[in-house]
Image (cartoon, rainbow, N blue to C red; front, side, top):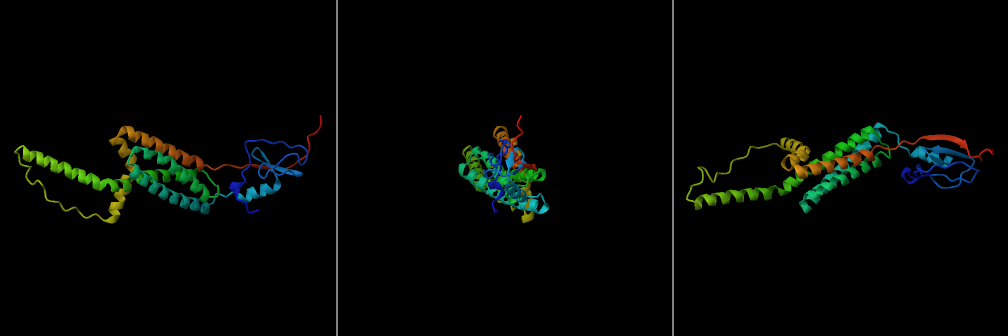
Length: 250
């Protein structure tokens, strides 16, 4: 009686027809039918399993949605961290395929949190969380590679000055320039800018590299689509009870 709903999904793609009592089996527990049966979509189900299904089907309440959203946010954070770590290790565009995994993780987590309840608002939340997780992963990636880019910029500046000196020219007045004091930026302001840049990162990449940026956006779309499909849920139509009696002879 304590079986979870996910462990007793009927074989809805296979239609079964009543014959004499005991000649047909329940589409959930596969035990012989008694004298009464129900139909769950296209499958014949015994009364005991119908009651378990009814108890296992989660009602789409506000509490259910909030719990699913909490699961989805947690999964999005895990997906963001995993995406960033793999990107840092691989250092290549191939990590765009992680968008598909992030979509699956977010969608599956939300369905787990809702105990199988789905619907349009779950789909919208899953799509937003998938996009946010993938796009915001750009922030830790950029922060990791920022020192290296800074060193490369300094090296280019020094090489340019060396070329000017070798040619007998003087560097422009004020060069090398003294380090300018950067204006102080509050943490809140920095987080705000980082969030905006992160959310726009797929399109920033598209503008800087149309080929790989376009591929990344396409893969991100597939990841969002997976999350969308998973959180759609599935409707169960229960009809009955019916008598499990042999058909009338012709």
